[in-house]
Length: 186
Ligand SMILES: CC(C)(COP(=O)(O)OP(=O)(O)OC[C@H]1O[C@@H](n2cnc3c(N)ncnc32)[C@H](O)[C@@H]1OP(=O)(O)O)[C@@H](O)C(=O)NCCC(=O)NCCS
Picture 1 (cartoon, rainbow, N blue to C red):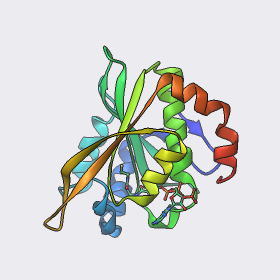
Picture 2 (picture 1 turned 30 degrees about the vertical axis):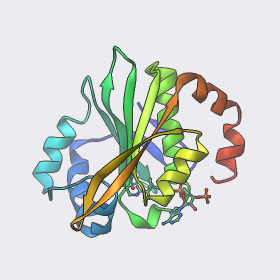
Picture 3 (picture 1 turned 120 degrees about the vertical axis):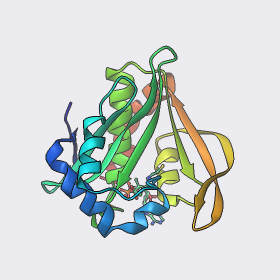
Picture 4 (picture 1 turned 30 degrees about the horizontal axis):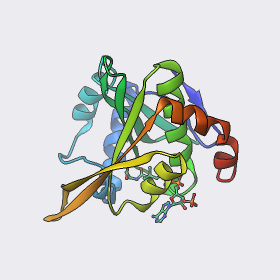
């Protein structure tokens, strides 16, 4: 699977991405604020993780822009009986944040989830203070369905998580207006 978008390409991770992944996390520690990476990882940890990045229940891909890996995205907790999964994204390279990449990637993963995997429901959990991710989810018409109390812990302080979801029929409605939503941005 490879999705070539206007701002970036989503592609499978390769073992040779491991040094770049480790470097991105080392160079951009502020990313830990909203991405749940608790344990530091060296290159061989990243290699091991990449080997398990595609399974029956998990699919992670790299996000590439200007020929460089800048982050990862994916679906986890895929439950084929209910046809549901959790959406995840992290743009580690801060030079590539705020350029519309998060919005485009989120839409393209939804497209893959609903049109190719034939899922019924995709959900995302986000820190209540993660303004950009909340904007993306709301632009793509995810519905806020729950508040998970004191779900995240950062620097000794707890934060609520907001859980959003989108159902397949809502996705197909969204798709009718997606050009206005994306082209306003991309
Ligand atoms: C959250 C994340 C995916 C957003 O991706 P992005 O490419 O930076 O976001 P976009 O450029 O698509 O912007 C989305 C919206 O958020 C706004 N935005 C972006 N960064 C912002 C910031 N720091 N503060 C306020 N608004 C911000 C943008 O202006 C845009 O709003 P608009 O369409 O009204 O102009 C990215 O910042 C990231 O990976 N962060 C770290 C990990 C993370 O938080 N993952 C999500 C966990 S659920």
